[in-house]
Image (cartoon, rainbow, N blue to C red; front, side):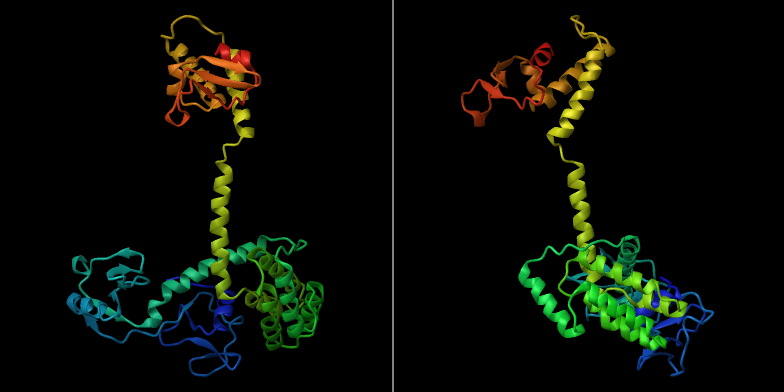
Length: 369
């Protein structure tokens, strides 16, 4: 079961979730009621001043009794979720006609070793979803922490920019980032209580993400959080930072952007461009030139190794496979272009000469190889 610190649970508390200390009994929890954190008995509770350090998402205790596999199977196909007695975060349910564990992989309940099963209530079944969102929140929080203040370049079209300015003007009375950041700073510095901090944060969070790209949102959040970090009152500062995070939907957008960027980086890393090919050719060429060429049959291991270096160079320089190199090493030059002689392909008709990539302009070196 995933645990959280006191500051980590504050955003979710104010979004409607309930938490309990790891040291409490299952029935006891805290929640926000009328803007104030209270226990399930309605008593005010100071989270930041509490001794309890580890917190978990509160889940209503399961009151249904133990059932057999057969009963659990029937419940599954009635649309209910089931867990084995003793399981923590795992639940099984029917998805697309198949029983799945946490909706991720197939599970055969009748072949399972567990004998005792419980019908799971919806609140408990959502634990996995909460943990997934928590991971995305941690990712964005880290992104915000590592970002530096920078000039924000808005690459959206003019129509969307004007629409955003109108929305901001209506909401805050001003529309430029500097004006809004100034107002936010004044609201925080004028705060007399934790409630004032909560109001300011809730009021200005939408400024960062409305009508914006993920990267721009991160930049705005970084700037606004830096303003919060300048608050002298330590309790107000901690509360402001804990609350000033993007709405849940943003984490999903950020996750998509991160995945896309990883794919893009992978493509960039594996790009076989002329620049890298020429760098590779230079290295191989230096090795070949440093060795003496032998006219003798390549029978020894050393001679065979040299032969492969030659083949490697020719395949890269000409864009032809090694098998084609072995068919013929006849290279002809026509002005600044190189051609293989005697190799034809179906898509080249009856041509006997095939143009090579010719990334190396040293014709003498190529023909010597």
